[in-house]
Amino acid sequence: MDPYDELALDLLGRIQRTLANLVQLAADTGIPFTLDDVTETVERGLPDDYLMPPHTEPPRPVFIRRIAATLLDGAMTND
Image 1 (tube, one colour):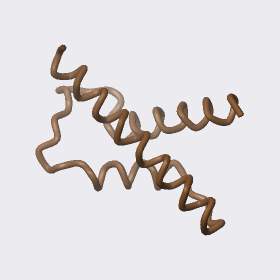
Image 2 (cartoon, helix red, strand yellow; image 1 turned 60 degrees about the vertical axis):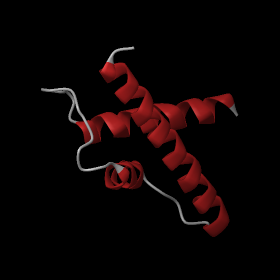
Image 3 (cartoon, helix red, strand yellow; image 1 turned 90 degrees about the vertical axis):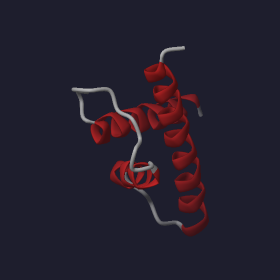
């Protein structure tokens, strides 16, 4: 497997876990979260030496936000 494929799978897993945690927290507290919350939480959890393909477009935070939005949209459509 290409190292960047592994990286993409790792990042997807981090986004999914973050979403699950924030959804549960929102359900428990009644406090909503935003896609910015997801992006910031994922970014804060990344190690300093976390790889990113060179010249990535869009930048990683935008990529995280788009994936999170897609996952949330899919979850809402499947309910």
